[in-house]
Amino acid sequence: MTDTSPTIRDRSLATLSPVLGRYFQQAWVRGEGHRLFDSDGRSYLDFANGIAVTSLGHANPRVNAAIHAQVDLLLHVCNGLGHLEPVTRLAEMIVEEMPEGLDTVYFGNSGAEVVDGALKLARRATGRSHIIAFSGAFHGRTFGAVSVTTSSLNYRTGYDPLLPDVHIAPFPYAYRDFEGDEETASASALDHLERLFATIVPPSRTAAFIIEPVQGEGGYVPAPASFLRGLRELADRHGILLIADEVQSGYGRTGRMWAFEHAGIVPDIVLAAKAMANGMPLAALISSRDLQQRWGVGAHGSTYGGNPVSCAAGIAVLEVMREGGLVANAAARGAELTRGLQALAAEDPRIGDVRGPGLMIGVELVLDRETREPAGELGEALTAACADRGMLLLTCGPSHSIMRWIPPVDVSRDEVEESLGIFQEALLTTR
Ligand SMILES: Cc1ncc(COP(=O)(O)O)c(C=O)c1O
Image (cartoon, rainbow, N blue to C red; front, side, top):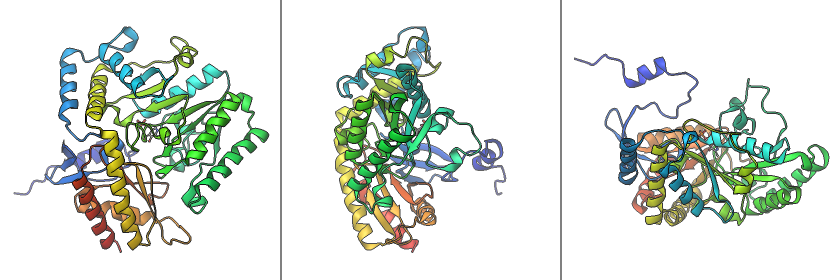
């Protein structure tokens, strides 16, 4: 007899909010290493990672053991009630990963939450109101975070008024706006900021710049190093805080622990989340002690932020990354993957650009290499074709025209080869 009972998908669609957009319609039931299994028992090479979260693979034995042990010892005490060893230990370990001077950690639960925290800290500590963010950025869904987000109109529509005194300056998108010339893109964006300060926003009233050193949802676009250096210089000149949102680009993804390291700059505030606890909710805001002292006791807080179980997972994540040399692995495997994708691009004019450091690689699809018109439908077709062949690969960018490659940071050389083979086949079938 055929089973007519509703599937997980049917029940989910009937009861969960239709506000949720979904890349796939499979019901996911199990994860093991770099493979995800659906309710039909089919396995997929998971290069989506729950959107850059399960960076050490599913059911990572070290991380899961740490979670189990902490669950049995102590599941929750709000950090507002005292001091907790795993929370303190993780903060110490994160500080070891930071440039000198960034020595104080505030824990939250999600990226958007620490983005909001950083905006509040910047305003409170400087006594200034203006915030400058960049076109195409994605910083999250809360009111503060969405006020500095411009990667899609849909994320902002109907929510007005958003946070006041937020200004959006052009992000130097070299491939799309400057024919790939990073230096011209960088000079133009810096010039725009100078003009903004000369005509619209008093720099003396500006609290912060907030930027993703490599844009994520907006299209996997690295900010040129010269732009980040120019931004640092402008911030120093005017006493403005520089916030680096490393929620997607941090934790080794780009072949350095933090993407800002590629530019040789040190931000005033660094934000991390996603890969920090391999799937447990956890986020961090890191700055100097002096800055967070100026925030003031009780000026911000959270019931669950820095939950001991998430922090126990976070400790295991950093231990596994350090022992396995996984930041170096991201750099090495990223270089191999980039080379492989460039070879495919050489054969296929629909690939306009392959870019990005380490394992944060954007493959921009175009209708025509001359006009660079985005090929969003192709992005969606390739996502489906890859899934049909057993690999999960996401898109990004406003029209889904950029394939985003976010393999786990412990990905192997064989898996890189396997993924390139699947992508090549998907390209062939979507011709
Ligand atoms: C750069 C960046 N910042 C912030 C966020 C928001 O994080 P969350 O979804 O955990 O709130 C994201 C999520 O994709 C992100 O990529």
